[in-house]
Length: 130
Image (tube, rainbow, N blue to C red; front, side, top):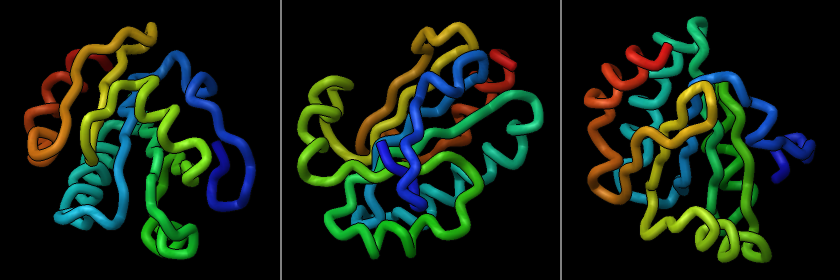
């Protein structure tokens, strides 16, 4: 999927890292707080091998670009043409949804909707995998 510069970014490029795969939209309630919590995790654990790959489902590309302007991790945009197949492929029931993958690419955690908020409980899972 394309990043904010239009360059294609692949999730597989992050293989070997602990990865948070984030499906969200700046249009959801509590977006700012949710991204702030992701930033805290990223700032604390990125140097030890945590990466975040965020897939945004914003309806408007300009709004998406404004929302992600200062995010330090890989952020891509899924336009209307590719959104449905991606959501079905990963069985995403609602936004936000996130998956945590270990360094071998195995899923170790999955949260959707309200359960995705309050990421403090992920800290110990991430710390164990780093």
